[in-house]
Image (cartoon, rainbow, N blue to C red; front, top):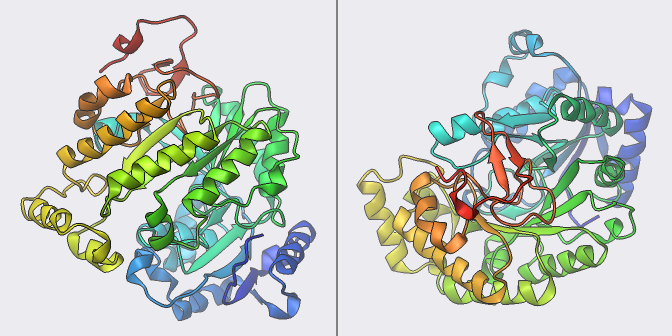
Length: 446
């Protein structure tokens, strides 16, 4: 386990009363160097007051805008399963569930034991309403809240983690059985899945579980270098390691308490040596001073150490220039970038909250990364993450992929070792691997 120091430890009563969950709590407490004397067991009726006392309703705020909070509180928890019909009854019984916005809403449901163990992203909706060139997919979750302190992130201040992993895995199998088209599924985008290992045990359980599946793969998604516990597991090539990778200055000055760029690459080298496919997502790309030189240095470090299965890119986003200047030390940025953003916002250019940087500048950044990847490893597939049709089409000549036919890090059909342009898709944007050779980027070019 990484050496974090939660301010307070809590366990929900329904979790403490479950023998298997209690065993995990004791193991995790020991990992933190704590005992049951440091643990507060709380009833459901206590949660409303605790949430308000700790001010967890505003955890949607970016961590860079909140000073001096330290490591998050930790709530040991477990799923309390219910059907979709129970949602209205829950909100009537627990009105606080309707008070959170953004991530706070998901967190509140998780604190009460009523989150969804997975979420579905509709590719049609993303492409037609949000102008995101992305696939339909399901993601898996057991944790909400992160111990890292990335200044652009709204996952800090409190973390809750579900401990009835065995029951959760049964639900995961049901989800996979109901969706045979999804061959690859990601864990976990609401927390960092590696930080609490090996004491938590969920990642090892997933690796062992998916090792027995003929055509299904699990992605472990992280900014951590805590991988040694994985190296001797018999994963059978069915666990994919995925890191978000930033440049060295960003990893130290902005992504606080994460593994550095160099440490993530070394963790990837270890995992690749142990037979795991490794992937990287340059997400978010933060255009600080000297971003070109830092990008080159990062890519050289990367390709000197590992052979990634594929790469993808996404730019930083934020709600306003005011939030940008509050989150970060502006000395990290060129004044011209800040001025560009002020003018862009004044002109109404930040209407899409996920694509706030001007498209021409996004293309400039992506082109630089793409040319460096071509120079260093031209056979490595490179794609855009959650980008617009217009930006994608400008990048087709450099990427050699299209918005309708691309290999990416977390694509639900992107099994290991696929070459670029291997995808077909159904009308609902549920993709599949094309089994016969196609004519390059012409297929599904949109």
